Length: 271
Image (cartoon, rainbow, N blue to C red):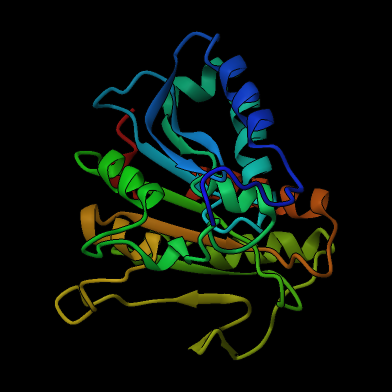
C-alpha cells in the first residue's frame, strides 16, 4: 500500500493520544514518546506512561495493552486505570507503573489483529528486523525490570475468560483467584482442558518456561519480557465475542487489581 493511502478506520488513535496528554498534566506522571513510524499516510507516535516516582522501595509494575488491534478492551482498561491512578496518592506511593497503552496503533484504528501491513506484532519480539512498533517497545523495555507484568489481551473466539500465568515464585500465583472473582461476578469462564493447544485448569494456563530450551526468536511479548528480566507475568484473555466492551474492560481491571494486591512476590514489597 502506498504511503498516501488510507484504509477505513473504526477508531481514532488520536483520541487515545489526547487522553494520554491530559494524563501527562498530573504530578508524578511522565509521558514518554518512545518513537514514531509512518503508516497509511500518517506519522504515529508510540508512548509509555510512567506513574509514581521510581524508588528502590516500590515494586515496578508494567501494564501492556493493544498489541492486537482487535482487542480494544485492554487499551481502554489501561487508560481508565491510569486516569484513576493519577488521583490516588496512596496507590502511587506504593507502586511505580510503566504503562504501554497501545502497542499497535494502526491495528487499533483498523480493528484488526495485525498491524496495517498484516504482521502479527506478538510474534515479532527478538527477530532480526522487527516491525518498528515492536522495535520501539523492545528498546523501551531494555534496562527496566518488573516485579509484575499484566498484559491486557482479549480472545475473539473463546467461550469465556482465561489467562496465562508465568512466575518464578509459585507463591505469587493469583490466576485462580482472578478466575474465581470473575466467575463470582457472573462472567463466563473457559473451562476447556486444552486452550490454544496448551493444558489448562479452570481457566488458567500456567507455563513453566525453561529459558535455555525455549526458542530464542519470534517471541510473544510476554515471553520476551520474561526472558529479559523474569518477574510475574499475567496475560488476561476476556472473551470478546460474547461480552460487551464494558464487561471486558471490567474484567481487565479486576484482574489487575487482584494482581496488584496479591501477585507481587514478597521480596518485591519493599515498602
